[in-house]
Length: 132
Image (cartoon, rainbow, N blue to C red; front, side, top):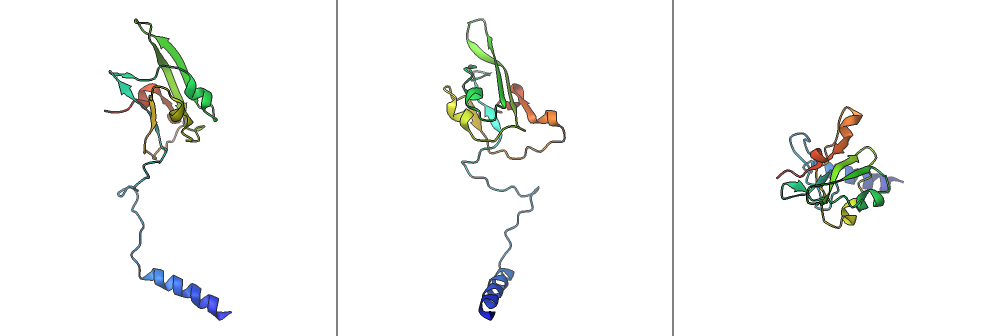
Protein backbone atom coordinates (compact mmCIF):
# COMPACT_ATOMS: atom_id res chain seq x y z
CA UNK A 1 0.00 0.00 0.00
CA UNK A 2 2.81 2.42 0.81
CA UNK A 3 5.08 1.39 -2.11
CA UNK A 4 2.80 2.74 -4.89
CA UNK A 5 2.38 5.95 -2.90
CA UNK A 6 6.14 6.40 -2.63
CA UNK A 7 6.59 5.70 -6.37
CA UNK A 8 4.05 8.37 -7.22
CA UNK A 9 5.64 10.81 -4.82
CA UNK A 10 9.05 10.12 -6.38
CA UNK A 11 7.71 11.02 -9.85
CA UNK A 12 6.10 14.20 -8.51
CA UNK A 13 9.27 15.31 -6.73
CA UNK A 14 11.42 14.61 -9.81
CA UNK A 15 9.30 17.06 -11.83
CA UNK A 16 9.72 19.80 -9.24
CA UNK A 17 13.40 20.26 -10.08
CA UNK A 18 13.13 20.18 -13.89
CA UNK A 19 12.93 23.26 -16.10
CA UNK A 20 9.31 23.95 -17.14
CA UNK A 21 8.49 23.61 -20.86
CA UNK A 22 5.56 26.03 -20.89
CA UNK A 23 5.43 28.49 -23.81
CA UNK A 24 4.34 32.07 -23.18
CA UNK A 25 1.89 31.85 -26.09
CA UNK A 26 1.38 35.23 -27.67
CA UNK A 27 5.09 35.99 -27.44
CA UNK A 28 6.43 32.50 -28.18
CA UNK A 29 4.82 30.57 -31.03
CA UNK A 30 4.81 26.75 -30.92
CA UNK A 31 6.73 24.84 -33.58
CA UNK A 32 4.14 23.01 -35.67
CA UNK A 33 4.86 19.78 -37.49
CA UNK A 34 5.61 20.00 -41.24
CA UNK A 35 2.61 17.70 -41.79
CA UNK A 36 0.25 20.00 -39.86
CA UNK A 37 -2.92 20.88 -41.79
CA UNK A 38 -3.89 24.45 -41.04
CA UNK A 39 -5.46 27.19 -43.12
CA UNK A 40 -5.89 26.57 -46.85
CA UNK A 41 -4.10 28.67 -49.48
CA UNK A 42 -4.63 28.96 -53.23
CA UNK A 43 -1.38 28.91 -55.17
CA UNK A 44 -0.69 31.72 -57.63
CA UNK A 45 0.71 31.29 -61.13
CA UNK A 46 1.20 34.17 -63.59
CA UNK A 47 -0.58 36.63 -61.27
CA UNK A 48 -3.69 34.44 -61.16
CA UNK A 49 -4.91 31.56 -59.02
CA UNK A 50 -3.91 28.18 -60.44
CA UNK A 51 -7.38 26.75 -59.84
CA UNK A 52 -9.09 25.65 -63.06
CA UNK A 53 -12.50 25.05 -61.45
CA UNK A 54 -12.54 21.31 -62.08
CA UNK A 55 -14.91 20.78 -59.09
CA UNK A 56 -12.86 17.92 -57.66
CA UNK A 57 -12.23 19.60 -54.29
CA UNK A 58 -15.93 20.19 -53.47
CA UNK A 59 -16.71 16.68 -54.71
CA UNK A 60 -14.28 14.90 -52.38
CA UNK A 61 -14.88 17.19 -49.38
CA UNK A 62 -16.69 15.10 -46.72
CA UNK A 63 -17.92 18.25 -44.92
CA UNK A 64 -19.18 19.92 -48.13
CA UNK A 65 -17.60 23.22 -47.06
CA UNK A 66 -16.06 24.22 -50.43
CA UNK A 67 -17.99 26.22 -53.04
CA UNK A 68 -16.57 26.71 -56.54
CA UNK A 69 -18.12 28.57 -59.46
CA UNK A 70 -16.41 28.51 -62.84
CA UNK A 71 -15.77 31.42 -65.16
CA UNK A 72 -14.23 31.73 -68.60
CA UNK A 73 -11.70 34.31 -69.80
CA UNK A 74 -11.08 35.75 -73.30
CA UNK A 75 -8.95 32.73 -74.29
CA UNK A 76 -11.78 30.37 -73.26
CA UNK A 77 -9.69 29.10 -70.34
CA UNK A 78 -11.70 27.96 -67.35
CA UNK A 79 -10.91 29.53 -63.96
CA UNK A 80 -12.51 29.74 -60.52
CA UNK A 81 -14.59 32.89 -60.52
CA UNK A 82 -15.80 32.18 -56.99
CA UNK A 83 -13.92 29.98 -54.52
CA UNK A 84 -15.10 29.81 -50.90
CA UNK A 85 -14.27 27.62 -47.93
CA UNK A 86 -16.45 27.69 -44.82
CA UNK A 87 -13.92 27.04 -42.04
CA UNK A 88 -16.67 26.38 -39.49
CA UNK A 89 -17.60 23.24 -41.43
CA UNK A 90 -14.09 22.22 -42.53
CA UNK A 91 -12.59 19.20 -40.76
CA UNK A 92 -9.07 19.83 -42.13
CA UNK A 93 -8.81 16.35 -43.66
CA UNK A 94 -6.71 17.45 -46.65
CA UNK A 95 -8.72 15.54 -49.27
CA UNK A 96 -9.17 18.71 -51.30
CA UNK A 97 -5.41 19.16 -51.56
CA UNK A 98 -4.86 15.55 -52.60
CA UNK A 99 -7.64 15.64 -55.21
CA UNK A 100 -6.46 18.79 -57.00
CA UNK A 101 -5.04 17.80 -60.42
CA UNK A 102 -3.19 21.10 -60.98
CA UNK A 103 -1.75 21.42 -57.45
CA UNK A 104 -3.59 24.71 -56.92
CA UNK A 105 -4.44 24.25 -53.24
CA UNK A 106 -2.25 23.67 -50.21
CA UNK A 107 -2.61 23.69 -46.45
CA UNK A 108 -0.44 26.10 -44.51
CA UNK A 109 0.85 25.88 -40.98
CA UNK A 110 -1.33 28.75 -39.82
CA UNK A 111 -3.42 27.69 -36.85
CA UNK A 112 -4.65 30.99 -35.40
CA UNK A 113 -8.13 31.11 -36.92
CA UNK A 114 -10.16 32.62 -34.07
CA UNK A 115 -12.71 35.31 -34.96
CA UNK A 116 -15.68 37.02 -33.36
CA UNK A 117 -18.19 36.85 -36.23
CA UNK A 118 -19.38 33.85 -38.21
CA UNK A 119 -18.92 35.72 -41.50
CA UNK A 120 -15.17 35.95 -40.83
CA UNK A 121 -14.90 32.15 -41.06
CA UNK A 122 -15.96 32.11 -44.72
CA UNK A 123 -12.71 32.45 -46.65
CA UNK A 124 -13.21 33.78 -50.19
CA UNK A 125 -10.78 33.47 -53.08
CA UNK A 126 -9.04 36.81 -52.48
CA UNK A 127 -8.44 35.92 -48.84
CA UNK A 128 -7.10 32.46 -49.72
CA UNK A 129 -4.62 33.62 -52.36
CA UNK A 130 -1.07 32.81 -51.35
CA UNK A 131 1.00 35.81 -50.38
CA UNK A 132 4.26 36.11 -52.29
